[in-house]
Image (cartoon, rainbow, N blue to C red; front, side, top):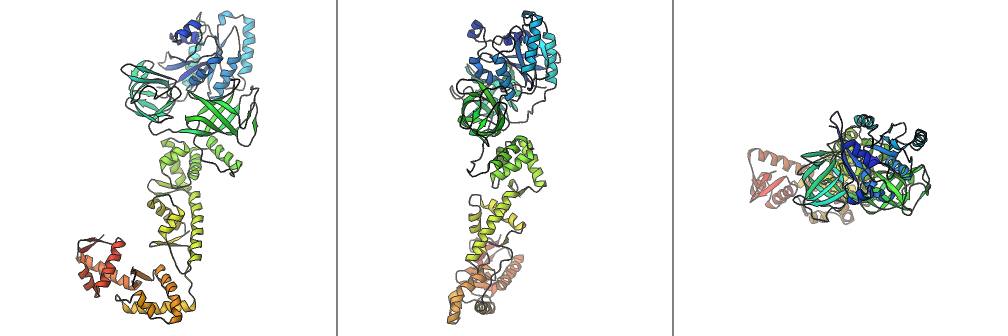
Length: 634
């Protein structure tokens, strides 16, 4: 079933409440003061049952200028607007202001109800219709029905209901699969039920038992019971007026203007980036540095405006802007807001939130680049927004990371990731971990600079230790993520990975003739020695005096290149000796489940000293595992 909220709007005493009562039989003036004064102060709620079985909620908002903050609290969840204009008075100041507010809130459909037609002469009605045609020009109500009606006589009510039914049939169904969100416009305690909040469910669906966050201050609660139009239900859907009894809260934990949201799905912010617009008929301008009243959902606060690329915004103009908020605001990309002047209080414009949690911008960041990113957030596809977010994250990320930064729902986020992977714009490094191709390329350039510096500083070392490279390249991520990045860079031929080291492709150790002579002498000695090699000190003592100064550098190059394997600080084997020992070990384990130190000694035909160094090297490299006095193959 489709769930739609109709909102009334219009000047004070133009018959909004009487019209709602005539349509629904429900008196939305619930306060004694409202009944005494004949003026709606708080929001009123009713529902309209149509012949086809559709039930639409109606929010009756106050029209008096003094209560316009209450009007704004109710307007945020409206799908269709019914602008009410009294035939005997015509267009009035709050008519214009309410229409401007509805336009800024992104409401795209509705009609005009011309009330009190029993009190107006035909000639006067003609003038009023001309005024209506003029004020709706260029708004979402241009070309929409203007229906004469009288709540007193009942004239036009049937036609009005039919027009509303047609509008409702053309309204898109909301996605019930989204995480639920409810801006709170009323809070009150009920004996036996605890704290009850009411509002229009603007996203998703909420069921009895659902865990919830109370934002902006992060209190935790559970939906103990749910009501729609005073009837208990198991589940309520976006587009319905809802009352939720919340368990786990005490008086004062939730206030009007707070947001009840599915747990872990919404965050609060003190700064937003947005598209800002000034009403076409405003007599004022917005300047950089202006402090304005900011209205979002049922919440209001002060906001300081910084225009992007402009110093001043005049009537009918729009631009991107940064708004610094005086209070934390729970919001999403695409949310609408209204701005009113600080003094005197009058509506000047509003806008749409494009980035609810913008990154800290560098002062040197080009205005053009910032504008381009906001254009993507305003007009881009889910894939384009996701790719922008992946680049802004500038690191390895998970799908929830991207979903939060891009402000996408789970379905669109998953689809965007799949599409970007198919296009090669992001990479899956390991299951559940991704990186933007642009960010990976940037890390590749950084990695090249690190290795170039290392190779310059250590020309006789073939490889930089990967642990050291990880620390310099990616100091934050866990080892698994960092290793996955290095593997991706190897796949892209940016680096070469060998064992526990990394190098640039094409880098090789270049020895001098004298160093080559020392190298050949050392290899001859170590290869001839087999397993029973001389210690490093003994090797050095076998060299001539003029060769000893090159010994350390040459030894370093042989170890770094893998030509020699260092079993311990004093025991070196040539790599062919090591390979021979590994071949014997593999053969041994084909018929044995474990090997002892004595067994290894006998297998190699060497002494206990060399067999122990070999086994401890294998243990440290996780090839074998020591269990008591024996080793098993991992």
